[in-house]
Structures are given as C-alpha cells and as structure tokens.
Length: 134
Image (cartoon, rainbow, N blue to C red):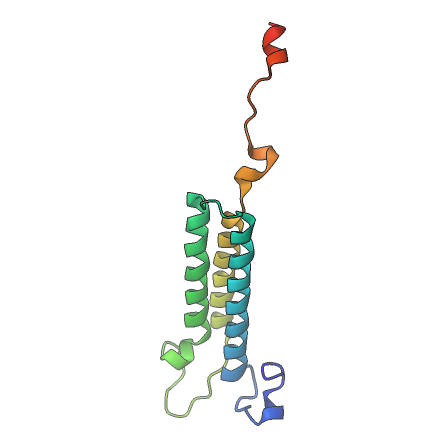
C-alpha cells in the first residue's frame, strides 16, 4: 500500500511517481532478484553451477545495481534537476535505465537455467544395436 498510495500514510510529496514509490519498486525488484536466484539455484540440486550460470548470477546483481542507480539518480545527484528545491520523480530516462537493468536481470536468470540437464541438450552415446548393424 505504501508504494501504491503513499498519501494514505502521509508520505506523498510528489504529484508524480516520487521517492517513496521508487524505493518500494526497487525493494520489490530486490525481492524478485533474490527469489529468482534462490529458485534457479534450487534447480541445480546441489550440483556445481556452470560458468554460464555463474556469469548469470553476476549479471543479475549488476542489473540490480544499474536499476538502483537509474531509479535513484535524482537522489544521488546524477539527475538534471537543481538540488535545493527539487522534488525527485521518476522520469523517462530513469525508466529507460531501469528497463535496461531489468533486461540484464532477465538475461542473467536465463543464463542460470540448467540447460545441461535437459535431454535436448545432452549428447547420447550410440547404442550397441546400432554398432551391430554396421
């Protein structure tokens, strides 16, 4: 409720998407990243992650860092608004930065899938019957 209607809790300072909504969105994205990571590691069933999966873990965390810095650019002083009397809001460039970061996160999660356990990606040894027929 805080992210959807901050005025109910007397936390709304901005007529547009402001600091509270951005923070709640980033906390939710953190929960999604952690939950996705834990779920995908569970698919490996205790086996060692492949190199691609290890890179995927790093891509997920990099994407989240990009999302945090893109979403809170005004707070960190990276935005184009003057500091003394500005009300931080979620602009179109910040939205694009977060969307790009979410693309990094999705790519990292796809890299973490255990493709080597899928029968489509396994090579099969020729059976004894096929060698007898030759």
